[in-house]
Image (cartoon, rainbow, N blue to C red; front, side, top):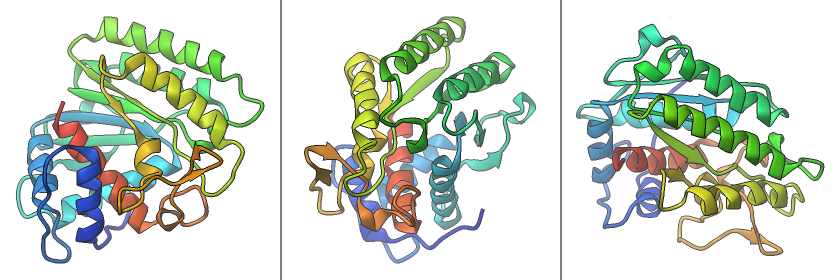
Length: 250
C-alpha cells in the first residue's frame, strides 16, 4: 500500500472523536501530538487485525501515520503468521469472505487459535458493509459472533479482543439499517464491559462533530468515501487516527 499525506485538521477532528481531551495541531504531514503519542504506545504492543477491503483502507491510513511519525511507531506488516507476531508489529491480513459474515468470525477464530493468540496483546477483526443487508439474519450472525468471541476470551485471557461496529455506506442506502442493528447489539452487549471501537460512529461523524444520518439511521459521510462504501484518503485518515488513539488507551 502507498502512504498518503495526512491532513492535520482532519486528524485533529478524528482524535477528538476517538478520545477525550484537547488535540494539538501540527505542520502539514505530521500527526497531531495525541496520535504521535498513541503510535509510541503501540510500538510496544503486538497487534493483529483481520479484515477485507475497508480494513485495507484503514491500514493504508495507519501506514500514512507511521510514515509521517518522527518518533517511535509500530511496523505495519501484512501477515497472519504467528512467527511474525512480536512487540512493535501491527499485523493485518485478509479474513473470511465478503458477503458471508459467519466466515469472517470463523476465520478470525481459526487464526487466533492457530498460534496468533499466543503472541499478540490486542486482536480484532471487522465485518464489511457488504456483509449485511435486508435479508441478513442479524440476530443469528450476532449469536454466532458472541459465542465464538466468548470462546476466544476464555482460551486467551491475556489478549485484549476489540469489538467493532459495522462500516456504513453513504446516503439513504437501506442496508445501513441492518448494519446499525448489528452495531447496536455490539454497543449494548459489550459497551462499558469490553473494548468497543465504534467504527460506524466514526464514519458517520463529520469533521465539525455533527452526525450524518438519513431517516434517523447513521450513514457514511460522503466526503470520507471514494465510491459510497470504501474510504478515500480523508476517510482513512479520520478512521486510522481514531483507531490508533483508541488502541493506545487499552
